[in-house]
Length: 195
Image (cartoon, rainbow, N blue to C red; front, side, top):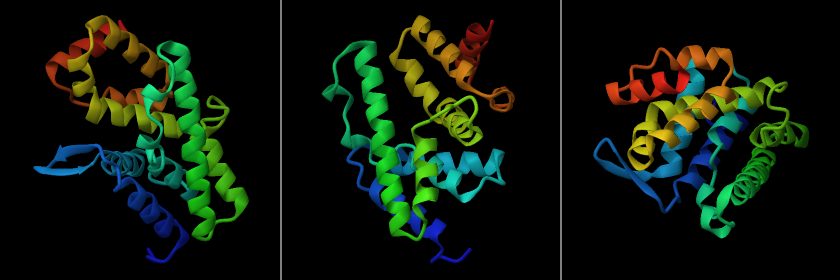
């Protein structure tokens, strides 16, 4: 692939922003920017299970958490209403940031707007690209973040979150998730959630 193509230039620009994340995680014995790692995990999942995805979806998937640290959860009120306001604000922020990067790197406004719509997860159940983004996010959570999440929360909360996650996924993503070999304690939680 041509390194100066709009796709590669945009993905590199997303990575450059996410490399600035002050939140670090340890991966392969080295500290790395959390959202940089997340974006690359998202792309790897899309490539593995949806290898024929178009460029717009590839960009949206990589940009799912672009500069996420910019809007902190604690800047919004506590409780469910505050959480939803935060998530909506994040969706708008990720979409606007990505649209600017796309137009800077050679995409037209219509293409950028499509990526923005996917990132805001508009018409989730009828927009296949938005559903695929949701599927990839759920699968990446189960594969890479579920264990850490499970250690911090009660079994009741974990089961509730798993059930919500499952309901958001397409049948294809649910089938993929069932092929994951999770540690025994996590498998038990999934079985309880799906019972």
